[in-house]
Every structure is written in structure tokens, then in C-alpha cells.
Length: 561
Image (cartoon, rainbow, N blue to C red; front, side):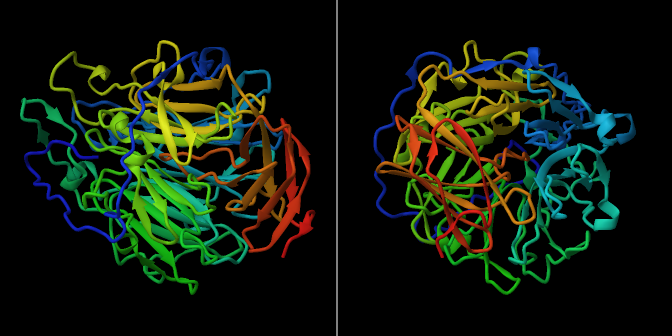
């Protein structure tokens, strides 16, 4: 996030990493396709009344504009996606602020506020969240990052949560942003990674003013970058901070986005951090409990022009169809969102080839997610946009930062075109969007979107794509009964194959439906599903009819080892 600040000089990084200047097919960016809306805003009918509070003080304090994320997960074990909204609050007196909210899905299009019954009393200035079964009891627990101490909530499986932060030892007091449960040491339980932004407190605030005279939010470069944190799960309900022992203290950044997976195909979990105006980090897992930052030499630290960009949201997934995990990030206005193609442990900036460069230049992207919304067999992309710098003309108030979101239709081969109407909505609003979460909220078999807007509410965007193919939804379950995060499902239907992972940690400060959803196009049957489990074992399942949801359990398939 690069903001105007006459007090702090900003120096562009000019180094160029190997792989970023390979011959690039610039292609031709297609203009937006016009058609029927893809989504319907059903928030009002849902009963969700959450309002995000940023406590706008006119002091232009940096946390106020960064805002929060949200989580879509099954909190009470009834098979429906519930909604947790991370709240901002009052930076001077957290006790006067509102709390984060948990809304339980009733299954009829409506949600009910169960915050008090669930045991949540969060009053810190919230930022992000992660979901995962850290205690191995078969349900999803919740971790919330804050501007200040973070919090871990253990789920009892019936929708009651207990604050176990102190016992677990995971209450890092920095400015936490995106976070993820990962099994980095392959011992079968979920560890925890937390991205921290900058070293900030009200006592460290530096006033910043734009050239046109108005106060603005300072660049993150007005503050020192913060150290990220890695906690190792000890398997007894406690964690140990292994950041230094793992080598993660060798490079600092102002992290906003986190993605993880086996990015070099060596069988273990690597970690990617999208930094805001600094070189990104790719922490290669050495397999012995330590990590090495190889982003620069791997070609994913800087863009193809050798510049560090303002990374916000990030995802790691197979976009090119070769089974390797590519990387995609949202960025500041005047920087395009960026796609790095994985060439086998090294990455090349394929943004221009993808067709998304020009369309994203005028917007500041935060939350994002890929899903096959129209189920034609190609992944589409939704991006939540919202400025962080004032417009130098126009009215005061929220309009200074408001922008429309964007929807890109997948054309196959990691190529996209923007959809009109803007963001796939009729009469798309301009808001200050931040977190975005993805999953089948209404249980009709396709992927919906929920967006959290800064200093406003949330929007539940139900998938109403008028032309849809078939699809299938897969829940991948590990040996303890919980979602097998990181498991890779390869789905075959006729002569077509898709590979997707069970993953909750992507977007910006948000947690998503862990189930795998694949659009099948015209195919009415899945011939086989091959699953590579987090423990390295592989199994085959199927065949299955299309337009169904299947639960695939470790040990219940046909061995493919």
C-alpha cells in the first residue's frame, strides 16, 4: 500500500530476480464482456446486521484504513457455512468498541447472531482470522489477529468457543494481519503462522499530509516493518514460538497476505508472504524445521520490472493446469494485480499474458478469490477493491476511498477477461472493500462471495450466474475427522482434469470454505478423484455423479501409493 507521505522518503527496489524477465507473451487484453449479473446481494434478507467500526478519529491512524476480514466455516457441525465477522473498534479504548460477531446459518437463507451464546467477547481492534482443527477433535477452531494481542478460540464442536490464548501461548502482541494454520513439520497437527504488518502504536504516529494539503494515511514506510511469527503445535494444546529457531527472523517485511503450500514440489509446506511495498518473501521449507527466504532467486519477490509492489491479498493455486501452485496477489492503484506462474520452483510474472493487468491498474485490490462461479470448467476471479489514499478532488467522507469490486471470467490457460456489469452485480456499489471470503453459503452447490466493507457492513453475494455447467463439491477429511487442509484433489471427467486443494487461508485477512468445488462444464459424471493427502499418501475415489457433494475420508479410498 503506497501512500503519499512527504515526511518519509520512499525508495523503489530496482533489483531484478531471475525468471521475471523471460520472454513474455503480452497477449491482448479483452474488453469487459457485458451480460446478465452473476451475483445478487441478499444481505438484507439474511438478517446479518454487522457493521464494521473503524472509529474514524480524523487522526488518520493507519489501522483505520486497513480494516478487517471475515471467516466462512461450519462453527456448529451442522454442515452449513456460518459467518464470523472481525470487528475494528476504538484504538484508544478497546472496551468501548463492539465485538466480532458470529452468525449461524439457519439453512433457509437467514442467519442468527449467536455471538453471546458462542462465548465471544472480543473487544480488541481486530484484523484477520484463520480456521483449522488445531486440537484434532474434528471441528474448526478460530484464531483472530488484532492490533495488539491475538486470540485463539477452541471450538467444542457445537458452536461454543473458549478463549485458550494464554494456555496455548499464541497471544503475540504485534499488529497481526493474515494468518494460517499449517502443518509445516509434517507431524500431523496444525501449526500456526502469523503475518505482522508494522510496529505501530498511538505513541508512534507520524502525521502525514498530501501535496494538496489534506491529512492522509501514512505509508507503511513511516513505520518499522514487523517480524512474522511461527508457532509449532506441541500436540497437547500448547504452542512454542519457533520463529528464530526456524530462521524466519532473517528477513522482515510489512506482511498483509499469507499463502502456503508445496511451492517447489519437494513434499513439504512452504510459506509465501505478500508484503506492502517491500519485497515479498518465499520461505522455502528445508525439511529440518528451518526455512530460507528464496523469493528473490525464485522470481516472486518483485514484479517483472524489478519493483516491489504493495501486496495485499494473495492465493496459491494451480491456474495453469499443470499441477503446480501459481501465485496471485492484489495490489495498490497504479500497480496491476500480479500473477506469478510456477515453472517448477521458479516463477515468472505472467500478469500481462493473463489479461488482468490494465483492468486492475486503476483500483486498489484487497480480498480476492478464484472459483468457477459459472461452472464452465475455468476458474474465475473476484477482487474486492477500495482505496487507501484520498482522492484529491470530490466530496469528503467514504466516497474519497470507495471503488467498485471486479469480476473476471476465466478463459482457460490462466487467461481472464473482466465482466460487466462491474463486479458481476446489477448497479454495483462503490465501497471501501477489504476482506472477502468464498464458499457455498446457501447450499445450492455453487460458490458465493461475502465481502466486508470498511466502516460499513458486509455483503452476501449469492451466485446467480445465468449460464452454468455442472459441478461437484468435495469435503476432504483427515484421520482425526477434521478437514484435511492442504490435501490436493485431482478430478477427472472424460478428457479433462482439474487440481484443487482443500484450503482456507487465502484472500486478505480472511478464512474460506475448506471444501473443494470444481466446475465440470458439460460433464455429468466424474470418473475419478485422486487425493494426495497431507501425509503424502494418495488414494482414489469415485466415480461420482455431477452436481453432488461427496465426503472423502483418509483411508476409505483405493490406495494409489
